[in-house]
Image: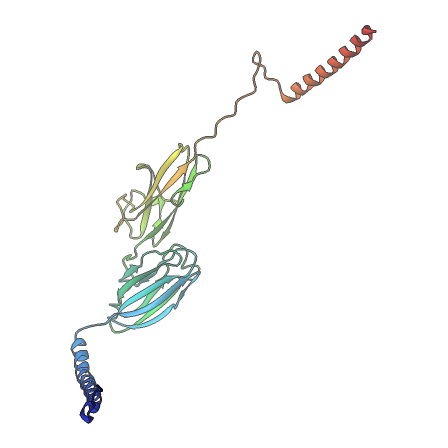
Amino acid sequence: MSEVTTPAMRARPKRYLYIAVLIGLLSFLAYGATYPSMQAEAAPGTQASLEVDVDLTEWELNPSQFDFQQGDTVLFNITNSGRFSHNLEVSNTAQHLNSPTIGAGETTTLEVTLDNSGTYTIICAIPGHSDLGMTGELTVSGDNPAPAEGEFLGIPAMRLSPRNNTAVVGSSQEVRVTLHDFTLNADSIEGANVGGEGHWALFLDDELIASLGEPSYTLEGLSAGPHVIRAELRNNDGSAVEPALSSEATIQVPAAAPVPPSTPSVGGFAPTSMMLAGLALLGVVLFGSGTAIISPRRH
């Protein structure tokens, strides 16, 4: 029995389509009417963070020049595209901020609120890297300049050599510190404190070895096995710098090689290899002579 289709039934799908289109149009218009008001409500009293990408490599920052407004909060998305470890430092006379140090292929972030107008310096703060070209500038427009250079406001950075898990050759090891924003002064040890100046304390297995105003010291007579080296940055009077700064590394000293057994000696006399060879040759000659003497007697 066939189904009967009336004209009203044939028109029903079109009616549904028209209804769906109408609902969609009304929804779009309603969203368009409310969206500007949503934006207007979010804007007053808020300062959206600016995001910029910075690529660190040997030996440059890319980009290295930026322009911002006083009061901007900037999020630096930092990528290390180089082979060595790098970080990013943003500083002026009132602020001094560092990102974490990252290895090759790693990423990190640094958020900075630019409270002052004027010029900020950006560098890689790993000692020596800025001297090779990893420097740049932030230019900040506004009317609130940073205070003039006066009291030392830098935050020191320190790198310790040898690296962690270094295998020592022999029983001695040179220990060296490389410093940024800090000056060693051997003549001022136990003297009055001066900002950004002092010395470092060297510890071996938690025992104080020396207080040093020079960047290197050689440890002698190290026993076999692991040892922990630690360097701590100190003010002239011996107190720890603020914030405290230290670095440590574990070194491995090999066991002494076994002494080979000595050549047996008789009566305190040890024959040399030349003497032994001579004795062997003499034995061959005597044996040959004896054979020549004995052989004729057999006839």
